Image (cartoon, rainbow, N blue to C red; front, side, top):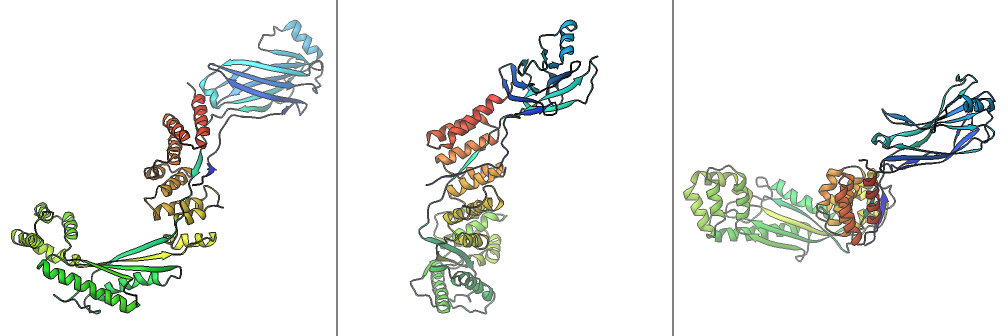
Length: 473
């Protein structure tokens, strides 16, 4: 099977620096900004190009790096680029501390700025800025302050790559539609009277089921299966005759109506629907429900069961006879048909919205090939696929990926439970764990997927390791 992959539409967060920032009306430039976090320290370095600055003799330019968080801030050692008089003034009169860099304008071209400060947790989302101000001969500020953003700290987060699997090709698309009809027959008779009681409605149900399939030019009916059931009252022998005869009568009715060959219509019968009776009784609140269920499930002969229920629990029996037994006299039918193959993407998408049951998993997969991964239509195709094939592992895997792309982790978990244990499913569970913040489980699953040959798992492992390393203590 061939794999495809797509990047999540989730935002990719990483450390982001701003290079080549200008200051002093474009005459100065800050380049090569680098910020590295050690175990307990933050290292800041940059190149400050002041070669084009023209600072008057009695003036100076202050460059003050600041690390600013939401509520906290810290000033780094600042830079003074001074004109001639101001430069010598500082040398004679100012105790220039080690953390202040004093440079003379016109004599200095490049300043290699380096600073180390203790690291604090709030700095993980801080912004490094440079405040700029000019001063006159008496130290008074003579212009508006300017601020340049140098570096934004953005913590690393996991950005998944989703691996979708193309389903196997379905050589012959066999589909079926099922139904039950409750045909009323006169007592002990097997003939069908079309206008008898509710027969017009029940016979219409059968015709409508067949017509929907039969009138579709894309399908071919391969079989129509009919199974007749009788209820348990009366003798088993007579109910056998009734179930068999009524099923044969319904077959004749359908064959004459549609002129199906005999080979297309398959019939079977169940003389007494004890399984149906058991299901009905199990859902009721009969006074002797448990005792009747025990009799139904016993190994007694059918006639003996019915006799004991009738004689031992007459009140409950009357209820069953009036309210339950009529529903046990039914004919179940299954129309099986073959659907042609579709290759045109536009046609597949049209059918996907009207009769998705006609499509194979592979055809639904074809429908997404030129769609934007993560788009509504893209996700819808995978959701339809898993609705049409709820037990298919590939359908569940792809639906889980589509759910994770749109942030539906609850839905993804439900699909992943039925996605099987192939390498791609293990990898998808790793993605789910990572998106849920369970990085330990994610690393274990990615490692397992990598051993299974899933190439994307190696990068996922690297990402998770970086995320874990970037988490601050």
